[in-house]
Length: 208
Image (cartoon, rainbow, N blue to C red):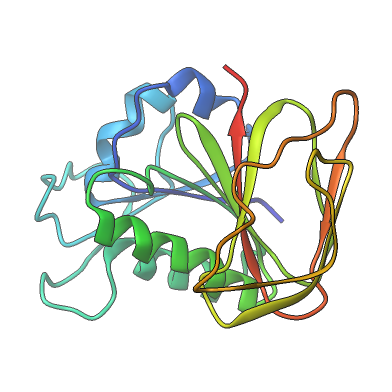
């Protein structure tokens, strides 16, 4: 099935980098002011959702869901739920990191929500990419300068890291002691991260 790309409204400066992640058959959902990224990304939305409090409704010949301004879900969360209901299994999130910290943290939680549903999801910005590591092994190539493992919920146990400058065997990371920041893939190697119990946020910084 096609991958669903959620385009939200956070700043994107390096469109050239973000465009590298896009595929010809992606299904695009633009969320409100995510519409401002259409030209930079070179895309035409397949679906538009939003309350249009930060971007006017362009009234394109595209399916559009107009939301109320007062609601529980953000436009981005509503878009995710809509895509899940339509059967999408894989997600790419762009324009979700940066600007207001509250929106950024809320969008990071979307990665956890999708992981709990058994969906695959990746968030990318001008500098890095993020995903959740839980039941499947995560592999990190040496095209990334640094990677960090952050625990944002509960306790993650049985953590192993191989192929990296700072290896780990059967480690534990809690929310109040984040010691998994700024690791490095060994030259010519592929680092691997495994988590037996719990979940971690994997943040990978690209080489410049």
